[in-house]
Image 1 (tube, rainbow, N blue to C red):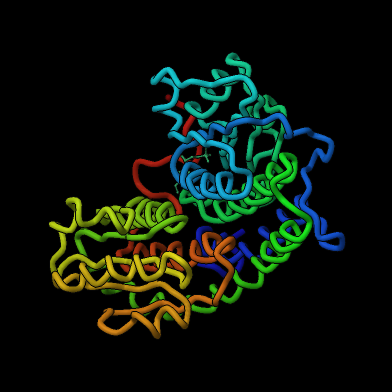
Image 2 (tube, rainbow, N blue to C red):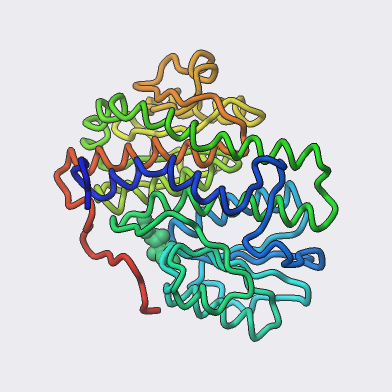
Length: 364
Ligand code: F6R
């Protein structure tokens, strides 16, 4: 049931602290401060490269994970949407790990990619939320997200749980390949273990997000900008907004704006900038200022320090708790989801059952 919530989507957004904690319990040994896999003896040491394939929101979780696999495990990562992957003669060498990511475990294109990778001799890992699904059955390494049933068509809690699993998988792969010392492993476990509390803190800003929804609801077009792991979040923000509010939205890598999309900027286009303070902050802010110099109305999502440093001149700011960069994508998913939700409610659309969409896409 929806409990006290008006929509399943809102209920599922609010479940994230609990289901992420539940998911992490299967991948972290808190006492020993070690990362682990649901099949602890599964050997990843021979993995030489990773291919990630998924669709929609699950694909954006994979895009975030690419940064982690490269950073922690130093393995090359190829990633594509499933509907493109199969038709481009992808090169899959021996020693490759294919990771499919799917809430339903039934998405036809992703399943076909899994089977193709299997026929090319890849080891198959499946990050899925439905444990009885076809992908779960066909994988060598089943990596469940423990998000519980997701009813709202727009994926929310499945996404944050996918990120939790993928971060733990990246750390496990790094460890198996001798790229992670014990101190680093302990640090990763501690940061991941902070995610549920930080998700809770992020949810506390729900009301302030609701307050600004009216401005976004009046727009015809909305842009989302981010760098690094916030770039896939920008894509995810735009997808959430378009699918439930029917407002045209695009996500861009912040530094790519000046190569064309900045021509779209005028005072009628709200620009949502996702920029936690950290190594990429100044670069993103300078892109944000380029937007403001052209009359763009910026909503800055950052932490207290980031908003102190760059919040002047924004039409609104959303303050997130200060978090380690590893868990920032999980935490910053919350304001992005809530913003889409409140805009859709303001527009009066059918939030849980948006037009033209199905929860599970079993046609190619
Ligand atoms: C967006 C959304 C879709 C799904 C996509 C993949 O909110 O829900 O983009 O993420 O259809 O579905 P799964 O993860 O079931 O393979």
